Image (cartoon, rainbow, N blue to C red; front, side, top):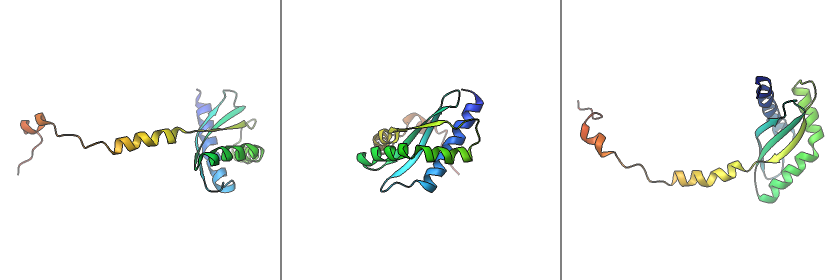
Length: 128
């Protein structure tokens, strides 16, 4: 991926986040932009959206964003100056939901047992 594409991806992700936060609040759910993927010609933009809410709210949020795509795209084009405004495609990203159970497992692990070899060597003990 070229440096130009990487910079455009990050800029679009940041600006889309601000546009959605400011102008497109969805009822009873929180919408975040996780990632943006651009085609090399910068004409297609796949926006991976995280929605915290119930399953029917997630699908509804993607549907509402897709319906408002034209207005969101215009707002984005005003903020990000590219040769042409990329066509936005909103996709639901469930990676955070998949990660939460793993984080819960990690949080519930017992603390590590002390290493008997390091205790007997006396290297880490400081006696005044």
